[in-house]
Length: 319
Length: 269
Ligand SMILES: Cc1cc2nc3c(=O)[nH]c(=O)nc-3n(C[C@H](O)[C@H](O)[C@H](O)COP(=O)(O)OP(=O)(O)OC[C@H]3O[C@@H](n4cnc5c(N)ncnc54)[C@H](O)[C@@H]3O)c2cc1C
Ligand SMILES: Cc1cc2nc3c(=O)[nH]c(=O)nc-3n(C[C@H](O)[C@H](O)[C@H](O)COP(=O)(O)O)c2cc1C
Ligand code: FES
Image 1 (tube, chains in turn yellow, purple):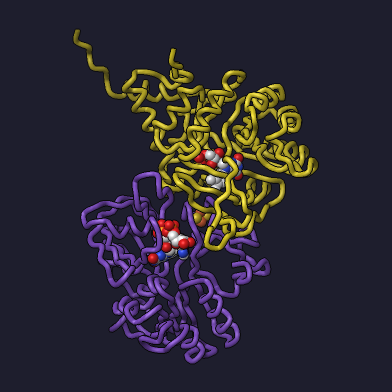
Image 2: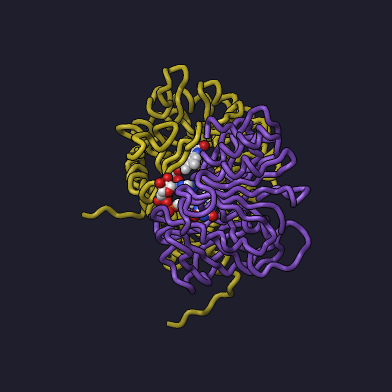
């Protein structure tokens, strides 16, 4: 049977549609976002990539007050990865609104603000301030940071505290809320249930995995902070496994993050139930990496004649 | 600023563990003291790009200014110290390599080229060549391990700067640290440009402060992004100095690599 060739424009349009996904009520042109802390405030990448080809931009984690971050050295390379202890250095929410949001608002790409605090109230205040400012499409709550009122144990490792933080934000604002989970727990499903009950609209997993690199000659830790967060391709199989485990209890969409370098890596997450993905460390290797991942996914969709939406959870476990 | 594939034109050993690599690379403008980041391997290990000072700018249009306009190539001078630089040294002409750059601020142009003293330790010599080419005056004080290493300074002859050498073992020039030469050379109206190991830079900063000379240092830190977003290459800068976005820390890749030596918190380095 001979098929009639369709006009080129139409195919492109169809291909574009094939990439669209919906997360927490946001329509994304494709499932590829940039991970918080690896893409600055977006503008830094403008000389190197087309910001309007991204699904969404997630900016560096914001706190109420500016933070200076940790002493140096802050990063060290590891096999197929890197360890970082930046200490959440950032300009603070007010400077973000005043100096960074102006540029971001002009983009046709949704901007997601990543927030973190030391207390539950910090999170609520941050959320209110950002909703008030306008121009932010959603919030991503980073709960992998120490809860000052609970002796510094991370919010993200205690389901009760995680529930409190997420409820405080979801009850305060109308903006869609994404909760970013820490992998540093025994059973990720407990955390998924907790933040879901607290009203989160989507869940990102995973944040970095705590690690330690020792300088054997000097007999000292490589990082001034001793411990850092491991990211990059080294953590990808762990992250994919956690997305897949999370799905067994998740009712909200999942966003996969951890070691995505190529479209193939992103598709692993999607087939294991992620609706969207985040590209992090790869932005350092190639400032155009996230767009290349999106282009690669489009190629896959074309080859398999499938829309991204239909690929979500498409991995079949062996009989 | 761009990320592009460049062809390797040559990659030659200069002496011992020092190599020179020339890349076919076209850009708008390069300032003396800027650097590039190379992806030494397309694989995942080593994962991160490696930073290298721009040692030579090829084919730039003749200009009277401080920067080089529209170059057609760049050269790096590098020392093999680990996995990434070992891979780099095995590359053959004709192979391609991904280049990000030019990055960083570069040297601050001096008011009076005559008063300039460049102080370089080891491979810290690299970012001095474009500066020397532009200034065509002043002095270069170069510190090396031994006589053989001083071969890398050959590129500076005929540029109009006076060259003085110090070696650790005294096999050529002054025996001892390059800072020993600086102490003799420095005047209150000198402008110092220094690049090399951290202890050398600290000693240079101390001498400059004592004599009242202005001093710029080019620093090195482990880097991931090179464009100021990962916040990994932080150095502590004096909180008393205004102008830094988050006072307390500056990024070597985007605020530097060149800093006024009085901005640096040397005890924290
Ligand atoms: C702005 C800037 C400009 C630079 N310019 C040059 C240059 O022109 N020529 C040149 O040869 N090198 C330069 N360097 C240093 C160069 O980037 C490192 O030597 C290189 O990244 C080491 O990579 P590697 O994989 O071979 O070593 P690794 O395997 O990563 O490390 C091997 C050893 O080298 C040490 N090392 C790693 N990184 C550095 C570093 N940044 N500085 C000092 N020691 C390090 C490690 O502590 C370790 O002991 C520059 C660095 C910066 C930040
Ligand atoms: C240098 C660096 C800084 C980061 N900063 C943040 C941050 O501020 N907030 C956050 O939620 N995650 C942060 N992350 C985690 C990333 O967003 C991402 O979840 C993680 O690195 C795993 O993805 P990757 O392997 O693709 O990098 C940071 C990661 C890196 C490497
Ligand atoms: S290397 Fe990333 S901020 Fe400097």
